[in-house]
Amino acid sequence: MSIEIPAWVNGELTPVDKLEAHVKGLRHKAVSVFVTRGNEVLIQRRAMGKYHTPGLWANSCCTHPGWQESGLDCAVRRLAEELGITGLSPEYRDRVEYRADVGGGLIEHEVVDIFVAEAPVDLTPEPDPGEVMDIRWIPYGALLAAVAAEPDEFTPWLRIYLGSYADRIFSAAMRAPV
Image (cartoon, helix red, strand yellow):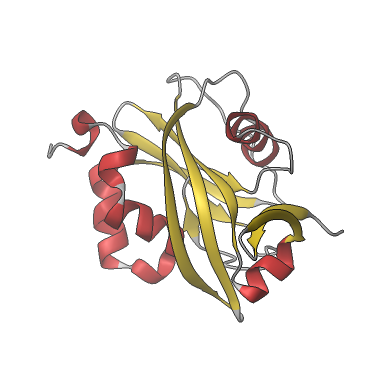
């Protein structure tokens, strides 16, 4: 199944096949969501059937918006599709841009709208096994330590978000040393 995503080609935003965008490293739109619960972050381990970065830990969920889809609508949709989470109100935090080699000759050059959604303590995600092989709630400080200790266990974009954009994503209270 071919999925078209909004990408910039010759300076114009145009629909491009998702795989083509990653093969050519085209700059394109994306959405990332971090679900938090107090000082914990919900991370997911990508399913082994994913066409890039299978088996690596990532933020709660991410994807590419449809051609006319808003970032917020995309964030809500993907929470439901990947994690079976509904009823949260993702809050827009910022737009960031990164370029990363994700292996297999694929490059992500993404312009990402980042959202954070606070979860109630009784939230029970129901991940789609075709998308997610495992989930974990992890304290923010422990996540930073895990990424520092074993960076190859985490997706390039999660490492970039934590290393370069944490102050634009997470509250000062969450980032404060315990």
